[in-house]
Length: 252
Image (cartoon, rainbow, N blue to C red; front, side):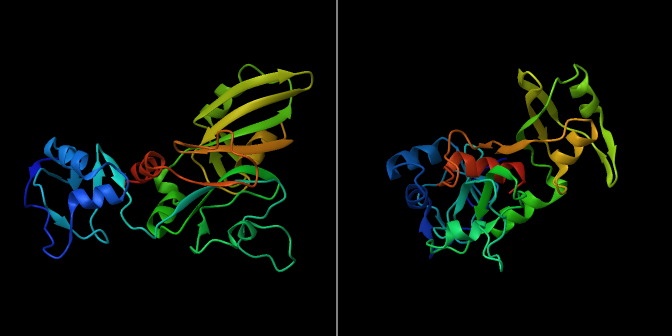
């Protein structure tokens, strides 16, 4: 990226860049001015060192230190720790528990990014950012997903190598990005599976195919966004670094 004072069009009726950064929670106006001076701020792909540059927060794409900054106040992205037994849908005609139940009191109209089947718990992203949601669900961007699975043991020492090399399922080949044995108990094991596939029931199907049907499954991460110790049924707003990591993962 090159230094640029005027290549990215200014908006005379827009808002000063340092004010936009301050409002987005990046830094105080004074510190934002220092970030601009140091060439750490990009607008629409160009480094901006010009103090007082005015931009339109509705259309400008701003990065600080390479991390995209969400400027629109009405854009929200959350993590729900979906409990077991909850459907990944906004409404269920049979009145079964569903994701929509957790959003009933929120003013934003949020949508779930992809799905977790009813028996799978864990990290489910909710957002009203249509571009982000579309790209996260599109297979071409290959955003990784991490799962913890409890399966019958013992686990063969070469199972990870087999899954990384790839196996053939009825709807095509599948290989994992990584496979790790987390813990082993008599007749049981806890394994971590990382893959970027989004096919239905893919973790359950691949582990069953190799003789270790899943007994309990939790998604713990999407890209760099992690569930951590978040309680089942609770939601939290992603921080700036987490949102930025998702934008980066899908090229936004």
